[in-house]
Image: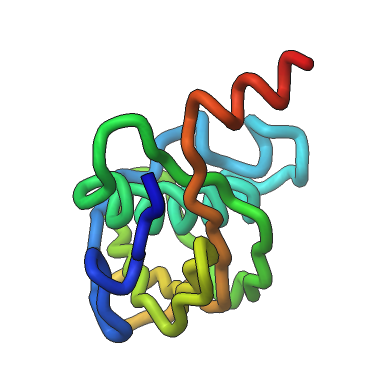
Length: 132
């Protein structure tokens, strides 16, 4: 099956998720710093998860997406117990590559922003290549 992503997704499509910052999401817990604040790897993971969920909601059975590029700035700290809003917006579709503008906010405070790319894969072919 040839998959035409332009028939499933549009430039400018947005998906927003909220996440509660827990102790397991902190730099001190992860070992990437000593502060009990949201760790950069978790900020990126939330951005990737939000983008993945947007694609997963519309991809046909047997297809998924994998992250291939992340370029993110972590701009402000965020404490445990905070709820953050993460937004992914499609900015381009080229073949099976989907590019996103990603942002994370706590209220009106911009915590981070950047770009993220995902490739849509046929899961069976992907796993076959992985196992060969």
